[in-house]
Amino acid sequence: MRKLPPILLLLIAAVLCGCSRQHKFAQRLAEADRVTATNASPDFSFGFEVTCVSPQKIATAISSARRHDNVMALPYIRLEFFKGTNSLGSVYTASECVMMTLAGEKYGGAYIDSSGVLLAVFNEYREKGRAELFRRLDRGEDCSNWPTFGSIEGTNQILAPDVR
Image (cartoon, rainbow, N blue to C red):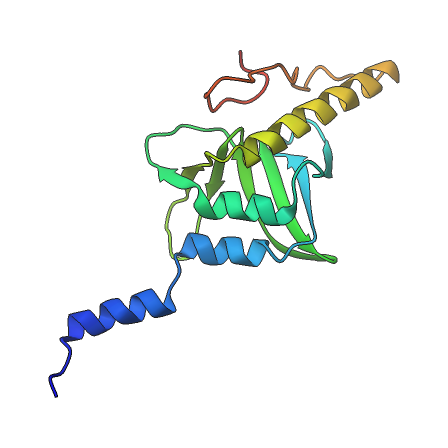
């Protein structure tokens, strides 16, 4: 019987054994029962539990997002995935962009989600952030360092919400 070349054996092993680091990370996040979204800025404090989509849909969007080396993005929202009280991991997002550094990478990268899931989370963040801003203003708090949560819907730009 003829032996398989070593390179072919390695290729078969890679296919059978391995998912990408991105997919493995997303699989871990998919075990979450809730996701919280908090601002990535130290200038103001705001956060909530994401309700517009399930943690599994967010993990799927992260898994299928494609890396783009020519994207400049500011991390705006920190999404943290929880199973019970245990944190499974977190990523930073801005609109449909997710920024993450995967195991073994020296530098992180920007990945673009084309499914619309991360954009839905971003829009929920904007709506709840705007409501919280008005609540704080009504209480007389100084909110001069808060973003305006302005609208950039329908654009394909990777920008913080207060950049117009």
